[in-house]
Length: 447
Image (tube, rainbow, N blue to C red; front, side, top):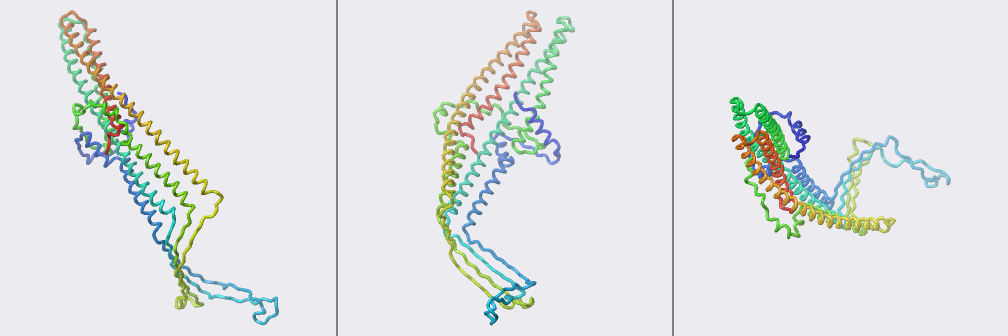
């Protein structure tokens, strides 16, 4: 079975230092494992946090259209009051002369409140639409993360089931080979068979024991991989409630072959549609830059002035105003025009990407269909080969016991059965994985 031992070893190492105390025990079906992953897998949790972040972004954008109120306060101590030169003739002095005069007082303080309110801004309304679409994009990204987790957990679950089936076959072979070892050893002691016959069987028996030990270690790592995909602490105990017999590998592919709109069920297609909407809103925003903006503003300020710091806030000189301000874009060197053109190109490119994605999803579905059918046929052939190999071994043992066959024939038949078992295990795993890939390709995996 082609597995990345390096990945599994890294996962085992990264979690190997966790404390064993407080471990919990779970008995999960594949559906239970997937649901657990929805609540604990980091990628799903982060995608859910992105939705919350998008909600806050909508509120942030909405807040732009609400009144903006600011308060200011200032205090000034004129260590030297500014001097202003006035023409001397104002005071009867000769023309061309200037008299220095100081205006103001030593201490000044100002308290003010200003408020602005957007009355019309095309970009603001487009921004509201875009922020809601961005929230939709985050929600669909969350769906995609759950589908990916579903696929990864299901495949990891099936890998453990297949490993358990491999152990079952190994145990059966070891049991029957142990019986054969005992019989051959007894026959050797009685002088009916040669020592080399015993040695040949011993070699096979020891090889099977080694294979079983290796499979057990790989099974432990695959359990850790399953927990990793689920977001479950490695120290927890997990057993599988589903069996291989619970999995129906037979699917009606004829219905899927005529389903030409399956790509609408694929989250990747939905994500690209949402991206097009965002690009269209960006284009709309660029066009809104041609429109004028109108806002209302108001201010109230209290001014305090005095030469005595203790009496500074005794006298107030207030001021207040309300008004409107309009900004009319006239000419900016054709920047807006070229920005609109760029956004139009972006929309066209995203539409082309959508069409290409549609074709890509169709190809993926066709490949998944072929892989699934090939996997089923291969699995069925491996089952028949496994049965034939088992029958060949049975006949070879009978011939050997009756003295018309050799131990070499038995050894070769045993090797043939082990090879058939290995190919069956590989075919079983490939068929299970191709079933998951097929369900994903046709948009059957939902959360």
